[in-house]
Length: 138
Image (cartoon, rainbow, N blue to C red; front, side):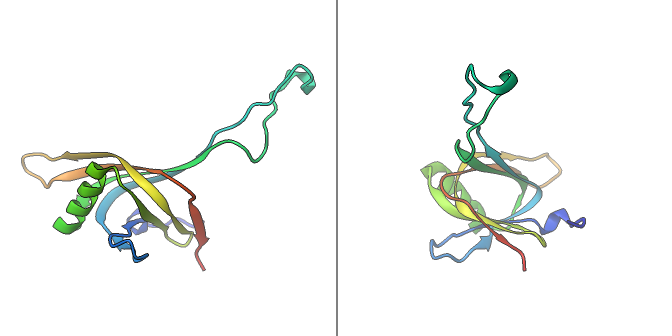
């Protein structure tokens, strides 16, 4: 993948629950991570006592985090309401010229900050809460 602008990685939320995604925040820094736990099946007969893993098992998850400024008051209210309700909602992460990661996520952290001579900023963390799909860019 050729170098891309970080500002083009977008975090979108299905605000209405109808499958229509809207960019909800002006994130200045973003991160998407995939993790897969392993299942160790090593036993006394393992060759050379090397660890053996069970393919296709374990728990997979995706984490999204970012910091920036809210796009508008409606976006702030929408995210804040979902956090305090502990709601799981449909989110998308659009990665330029790579594809779209989509699935149910829960907001696990929401922080606000600011300095006396600047704007209010926020940090958000989301954890996958079900099947996450990937659609490659065409």
